Image 1 (cartoon, rainbow over the protein chains, first blue to last red):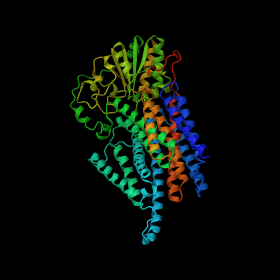
Image 2: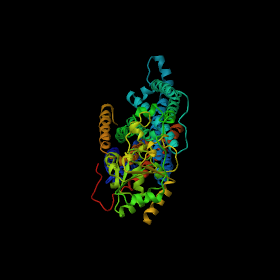
Image 3: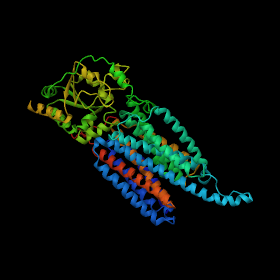
Image 4: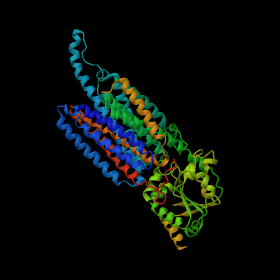
Length: 489
Length: 102
């Protein structure tokens, strides 16, 4: 039986790795997640037969509890996962990731409390034996669990708990339920002190045989996760979510060692390293370093910087009819979609417009900035949802040299990713971020709800350029007008 | 059980594996892949089941219950959203032979 279980865990680990590998190409991606899913089902089923479960005198109760917990947790996630709109995907990923981190932390909690219980019970026996000068029972949690296991259990607990509370905050912020970046004055300093105290308690847990330090330890880790995440600006959220994803993987790997479970070690560590690299790639795409994301609230000094900004002109409005004519007779149109397009649910209309223009012989391309949407690749998902084939979609490196040959660039719901200040203005908070060179095309049309600034709160000089025209209005309505205009020609 | 050094080797090899898998991924798949890796660490469900399985008193059972609940949410939710995203990726009908350049 044990061999069957171990073999199944091995097969599950292989399926996870092959599945992730297939997910790295759009052609095989769907099969990849299905393989990984099969691995998960297999691993879960054989765990019901493991001796840890069957040997326990409480086995019957525990089985019922496990099934009920899976039904509730899995049922909730199934329904919410099926229901969530594609635009809200990032916060759902944050939520599910937080649950995983919480699970890893609670596993550590069970193990630590169990060891603490054993040590405490052993103390009474030790008191008796002390008279004859022997100490038969472990005095501390570390002695009861073993040095390596205790250290990894505690590390996994810290990481998992921070990923848990941090992810919940990330979810709340992206979901618009929490709109503050400020919690306490001198937040960075407080976080540093808190982290030091937390490490102190982690050491205490290692040497203790009492309950209290364990409880304080977990409470501090929870608070630290909140404190770290609240000051992070909205634009940096994807990096944080990705980082917490990697951290959860690491925590799962550590707790896998604690439980002696190879499948958990492998899957957790693979995600830990893959997630770290992904975090790094995302941060690089946004021209931010990971430490930067944590230690300087983005946009906190923006107001001062942009207030002194001299505007070189004013925004020039344009009517949909004129834009329609312009596009219908263009040789090449490049669409730069942003999160605003998705919020307005305009992607289906944009695709309709694309097909109309293609029929008229216009070459239409989509240009995707690495951080378009709320996280890298999010915009591709939203366009895919509307039926836009992925071979019309170009990455920034592939399209940036092509803007010079473009008659009309249609910017819809995007802002910061086309902000030329990122190239020219060293005082801009965006300075240094690679952008799409929309301003190099013959005409730039910007569809925008109003005159306000974007997600990051930074002014955009592109809107003031001579070859830029503004088409104000709701994204979906504006694109609809464009479709009508093109149809009437 | 996996002890000491053997586990260290597993950690190392798994670490390199994860790095290798991600290093060749086109940007368009970053979000689904993050979601997919989020699903993979849902394997924590197995650990949570064991943690609840070894629970001997009510406190441990209560914490273990929370662990399984959260882990099941991670695994199921991670799968559902990843699958939903990936099923939408389709090449254009006109040029079925053309594949993603990177």
